[in-house]
Amino acid sequence: MEQTGEVLVLFFLGTMGACVGSFLNVVAWRLPRECMSIVRPRSRCTQCSTWISWWDNLPIISWLILRGRCRKCRTRISCRYFFVELATAVWFAGSTKLLFGDAPLLHSSASQSVVWLHYGVVALIFCVLLVLALIDWDYRILPDQLTIGGMIVGPLLAFAAPDVQHGRMLLHLAGDGAWALRTDAALNGLLGMILGAGVLWLVGVIGTRIWKRDAMGFGDVKMIGAMGAVLGLWVFLALVVASVTGALAGLVRLAIRKDHQIPFGPFLGLGMLVVVVAGPQVLDLWLGLARV
Ligand SMILES: [Zn+2]
Image 1: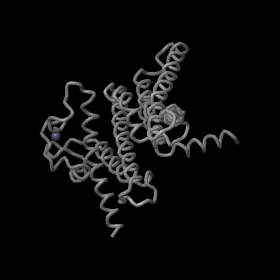
Image 2: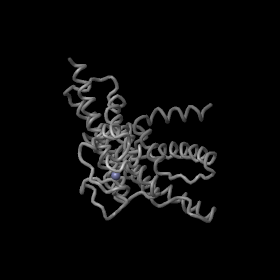
Image 3: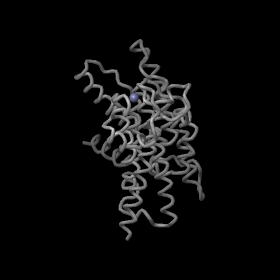
Image 4: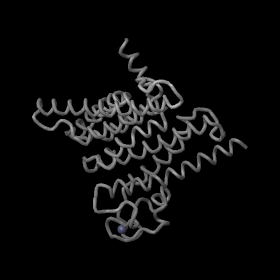
């Protein structure tokens, strides 16, 4: 009985994730086109402008049924829509495993509601990072609505779900008391925002002096500020992960296409997700490697 319940919960979360992923596709398409509203109107085919009916707009399924083409003009619809929906569905269902471990999903206890709040905050972080990565990939910009918005909301998210900072690398600023851990997390968020953005801004200024061209976009600095606002000092580990994976991807691209211009935003997003899910493990691995 309990297992049926768990499968139903996972199915529900996955379906919700697919729908949210569909919305994220719309946001990533419309947000950079500033004259467009996010919520209205309904979607059209970008080629023949036909309104897309709801039954051709079902997340994941419709793309498969239509084999990735517009029903009317048969123009190819990018497989990215499909993969964004699939990835969000997998994350919404799968991240329960990462956050809950083997604990039962349906268990009404106080500690369980804390975990579900943590789950919600991580899901929100995933969505914002995915949209930022898509827009940065397409246009090489990171919209202020998301980066500055993240800096404002970040400490509140840390307050709501202090577990995103893993209870480690935390400067105890708030003293003792019932709310101390949450207040600490929010204050560490403010600190992470100022230090993270500050350090990156300095690196950018020095880089521009040395190479005589813009080394770091200001959008990246604001995104790191937003990441620090949630992660606190963990933002620096996210930066390490982003730099390593970004450099590797740059080398691969250089080998294939003879150019190494790739946006940093998607790798910053990856770094943050890795730290949110497995920060302490990655830190221990890194420290272990440093000791060898
Ligand atoms: Zn069409």
